[in-house]
Length: 224
Image 1 (tube, rainbow, N blue to C red):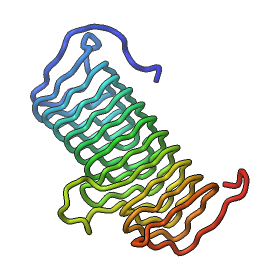
Image 2 (image 1 turned 90 degrees about the vertical axis):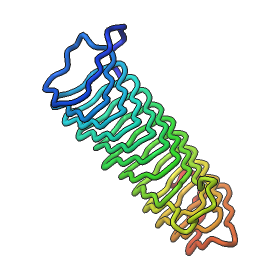
Image 3 (image 1 turned 60 degrees about the vertical axis):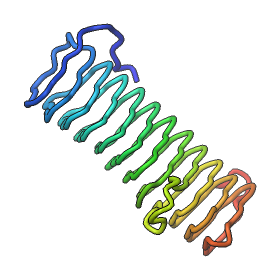
Image 4 (image 1 turned 180 degrees about the vertical axis):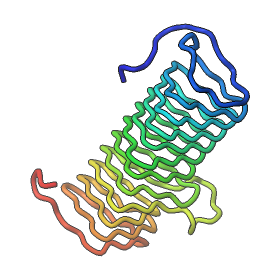
């Protein structure tokens, strides 16, 4: 994360147009209309209320998206807060909070991941991962030390809310409404309405009566 700036400089509010290059004099950019950035972005703060398309890599301290944002290349950020529609090619983010829709085509690496809403992610790596689903979600591969998957409290359309994954791996896993080919962890709790093909565990597992697990395999020692 060495690419971030650390300075106090003017704010630029952009309302429309295609921007070829961003002046280094700006510390913060606010997007309030339909804007396209052609070249790379390196800022302390990027705030999006309108629509933004970035064609090159983005390096920011804080990214807040309340609108529609498409990042066509890599994102590197200390903190990301999304309450709108966000689509990223790949990202490295220290702390990520999403309360809308988020899509990551490739790898998302993060320390803290908290998402409430709908998501589609190729591969997610993190230490603490907390997911509250409001619709159908897909994460091809999920790896974390602590992984918690549940539903939002909205009681409607429960059947459409689920996480679909090929592989979920972690130390402490707690899953509900999850369909996965493989689940592997030290301490694994399979909550209500899960469908798991193979469960690997080291120390403990528990399966809710409403869930279905085809195969249960005990992992000895340091076996992965």
